[in-house]
Length: 157
Ligand SMILES: [Zn+2]
Image 1 (cartoon, rainbow, N blue to C red):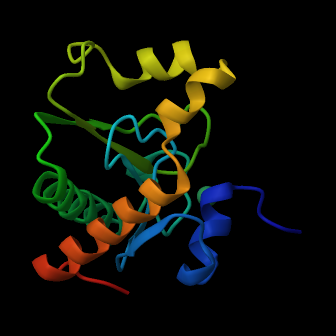
Image 2: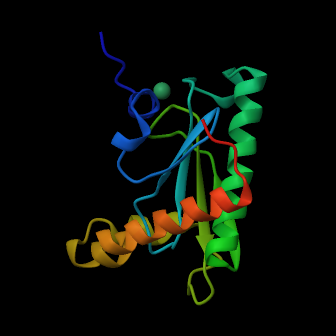
């Protein structure tokens, strides 16, 4: 029987087969998030499955958290956001994962959660390109993040 959890499936797959793969940490894997209106937005998921993060072992929890700080540092260095937002929700996918949203200068809704714009625009095909970014810009963002993480000495697995 296959595990239907999408993050477990991605955690088990070779990194070079993952769409939008950014970095493989010892306890977590980072991919570029869909909503690149927030330039540099990444999703970071634990290599281990749990419904709630506190169900992970201490090593897995600490590894996931430490990986998030590496992603935060890399996103800040690469894209100089005005602020970073961190969210761990798990309402749609019950597997520990962080959303790291850079909030750039000039975002007219910078006081609101990133999801406000996403929820409003994702159902409108004409607005999706502005929300997701094109493949060339996504690839460039991934390359910048990989180079920044490597330069910073982020642990990899
Ligand atoms: Zn899972």
